[in-house]
Length: 111
Length: 111
DNA sequence: TTATCATATTGACGAAATTCGATTTGGTAC
DNA sequence: GTACCAAATCGAATTTCGTCAATATGATAA
View 1 (tube, protein in one colour):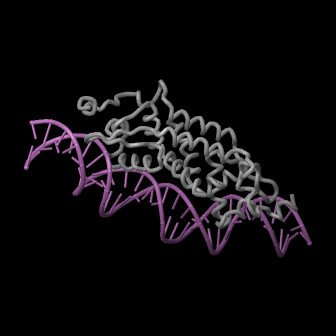
View 2 (view 1 turned 135 degrees about the horizontal axis):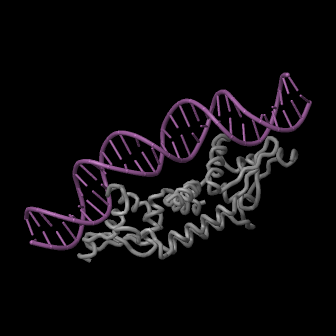
View 3 (view 1 turned 180 degrees about the vertical axis):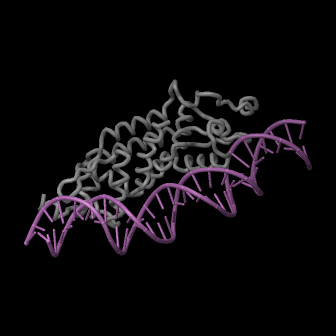
């Protein structure tokens, strides 16, 4: 259950087009905030907010150096997120659909 | 650009824990709405709303039969979403970070 | 037809997200 | 020290989201 919350935060972060584009930009390597800001029509405070969200869910790491902050992707979080997505979309023995009473008598009888 | 919108809708759909759980439940096969409803503490209208979102982004397909609606995962959408996630997080030649002027003079000079 | 059942839709509400301008923080340069 | 720059934070306006009760739709059963 805690696992769902962990990864749905990542998905929520990727659920905004501008944040997905920021992730894409970072795929080639570390960038400082000002470089990212140049590519988008948004205020500095808005970008900072997006970067905070991306960092909080674990997708991105920030490294402060002097007055700049450099951002890069956390490949480990990405790998685990892909694995989670694969897991919840693949048939498996311990699926939550098999826990407890999931039967709907009406449906079974009338089908 | 249109691609970002297409897949961020999928991520947004996966960004809610209950919807992620619904996807997980469907991973073992088709289920009717009433079966899913039994597993969650939410009203029928709320579930219907979630199912609509999951269908609209392409993750889930609905099949109406009599008075029931059966839902199942769209594996193709899932595969393409995983590929998209891999693409935007992997170093590549045609990355958007290489388009146009992305330089931040100040950063380069002072670093 | 009338009743009933499964699901979808509508309308309303509070909570959360997105955005910006203004300000603050903390580092660098003079 | 002061001035300046990059980034974070704050406060407020607007939009979107998640939720429910009530109602509508549409199929089946009697």
